[in-house]
Amino acid sequence: AKHHPEHDFRPVLSEWIDETVHELDFLREAANTELVGAALEKAGARCRVPGVVREGAVRPTRRVLPLEFIDGVKPTDAAALR
Image (tube, rainbow, N blue to C red; front, side, top):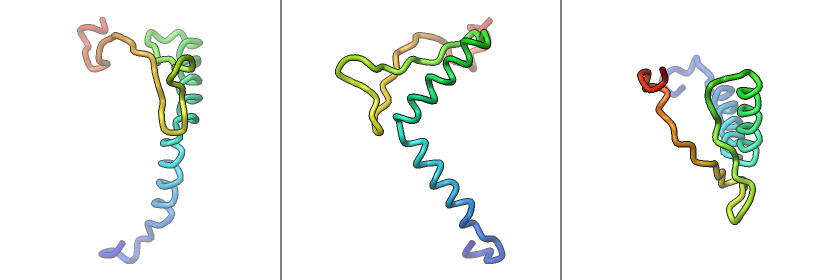
């Protein structure tokens, strides 16, 4: 914007800031993770989304999102996905 004063990037920057705040709220992300996992399961997708750990000493907070470990393959490993 400094070099191109005809462009006003403030609305874009404002939206980016708002969305970043939401993305960094891990309680919200925990809920979204569970929604995506349920939707993929319902659709019969052949993939899994790690479950959110909600029991034990570590639980989701706004700053921590504990997820189960899933041993799998990279989505870019075409041979392993066949």
